[in-house]
Amino acid sequence: MMDIKQLKYFIEVANTKNLSHAARNLYVTQPTLSLAMKKLEEEFQVALFNQETNNYMLTQAGQYLYTKGSDLVQNFDEMMSEMDNMSRTHEHPLRVGLTILFVIQFMDEISHFIVHHKVDLSIVQDGSKQIQHLVAKGELDIGLVSFPNMYSETLVIDPLAKEKGYHVAVVMPKDHRLASRDSVTFEDLKNERFVTLNNHFVLGELLQKRSRDFKFTPNITLEHEDLQVLLYGVNQLDSICLLPHEYRQINDRDDVVWIDLDDKYASFDIGIATRRDQLRTDILNDFMTMIKQAH
Image 1 (cartoon, rainbow, N blue to C red):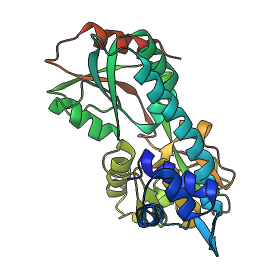
Image 2: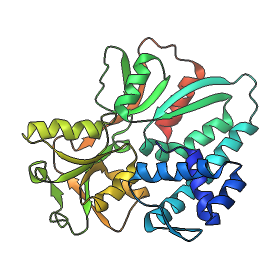
Image 3: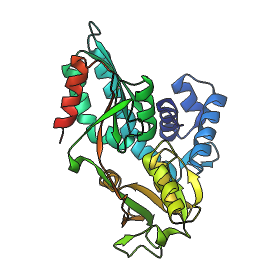
């Protein structure tokens, strides 16, 4: 999975348009940088550069990653700098699990919380199913997750307000045969190709469950945990994808459409997961209160 270091490598190559210059600026060897770019293209399954003589020019996909990635790196560096500048004296450790959607939705509140509390906060990003698993095992202190509770004997999930949940959309190319519909059902999707979240995510599990209910095996062309990759795959692989409709607000591409899913499992409430036997520290209670009061 792409990490922030790979993204910084990619941005430097894009800025210099030259592998050797980028390697020198990054204090790495040229083969190391070349391998990193190759792995990045293999992970996304798309070319990021058109190499012209010694110049590395961005493809359309590369330009998209550069634009989005530059903002992400800047925000990440600012967050790390802010955390490094804070005193480490008497900080309370807190291990938090969030999905990518919740990271984006609650980033301002989390940054504010870090500034105003003596907390050594570590964030794990994954799907709701996996976050529930990690909280249940004691590897995370708290997780912001989707219902249902899959470890009800071990976990308690305090529900958040209904409007903080999410609704499922079917994302498809603009020229798809179903693109003009107001909504679609799983019956409509039997013969489609899918790009999908993996089984760490509730929506990855939803596709498998409802396809069994409707007696078909989904034709999956790509399984990935990165929503950006999935959105790109919708067009490139002429496929459809189940995603939270709320994600459209922060990534509204003009080459896809978002159609409501008409299904009894088309919306999910969210909540804060903790272990039933967990000691509720002041810092944990303060974090939960902050999340409940957000938005």
